[in-house]
Image (tube, rainbow, N blue to C red; front, top):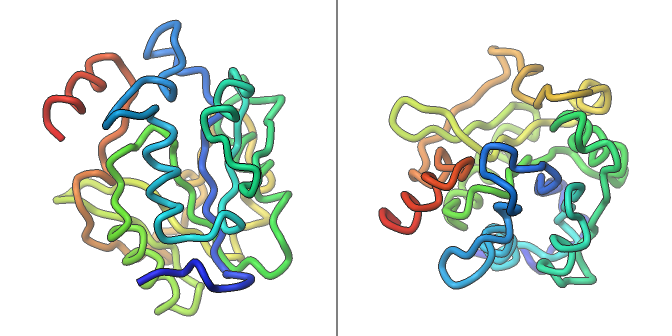
Length: 203
């Protein structure tokens, strides 16, 4: 299955790649190599296997020129968050403020999760569409919820108002949540150098 030929697709994929990687160390973790390519390219390449570049928005901030050069795709909208040091909320807010009017939902994807699969992305999106773009869709592996999360249009005003280090999950109403069983890649992110070693060893 592929969505590449669809025009004005209702779900925007927002990749969060603006953070400073403080827990990782001096080097930007998104430029570290996994599967023969930088971490940021793993998730972007997975997305481009199934979606058109116009369906993606990538938020950069810390070392934005380096990350933009790694992505190296003029067809993807890349937005620079000049307030990235204030936290993830500012990146989500920036992305929502730049959505096209026809967008009915946003899939928010941390850039440091290189093992999210195209199958999981497709299935999460199918579930969102099944519920008429009105529910919050969360991936679940075993008993742990993960990312990416898909949020409907009725959350956009709240998402625009996010500030500092408050993410989208802080706003979600329990009654809106639909959880969907996914693979381990939806709960594995790379925050530290130990996580990087674990990723190279176990995947």
